[in-house]
Image (tube, rainbow, N blue to C red; front, side, top):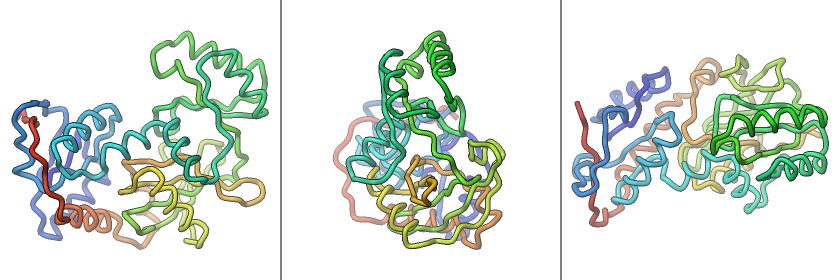
Length: 295
């Protein structure tokens, strides 16, 4: 097994321990020390599966596109990572499958964005289409703020600020729900509690155990399947009526907070799934290309 990761965080350390406990031979592949070599597929002969723990969405896309194109098994697969790494594509996938989400619009110009915001109604949340850890989120409470935030995005420039992802603000009860799905199993759910309206653990939210109700299990599994399946974290919001809404789906979930509060071998569950992927019958098509290491 090859594990793509340039940073070894608590999650990766737990994964390494779980694989070692299962007697699995694995190599850590630091993507910063790799380069794509398009006419010699060396990894297909060496690894049964590649497990991506790459933080950079762009790097993950290029690597997984190449690996899957050469017929290699990966976790997660390129289409899933492509969808989950872009909030616009995620929301489209969830909507196509009829899953409940906050009201959301995407606009491509300032005037269109302002019109969409007015139609959804204040407050709204402006998010970057690609991004994580609660960064660059803005809660917009009125027209003046909307104009200021949109003008700032235009001034910043670049592809990340040329598309406006607009979502209704859901007044959460001081928490959201993160659910880990591994294959066809819901492994756990946790509350992420915070006095701030952004409830990411990266922004200081505290984890707490959340009971796995039938509604949570059904919705999380449906959301995971809608984006292609694999090892995924599904973020749920509770609206004022207690209805569950799917907010986002994360393709490289962190779980250091969950390890503090759930009585589950999280890394072990993930490892077992990836091992199963490695032994599935899946003949490699003849491919051309490969990855070489520089160390």
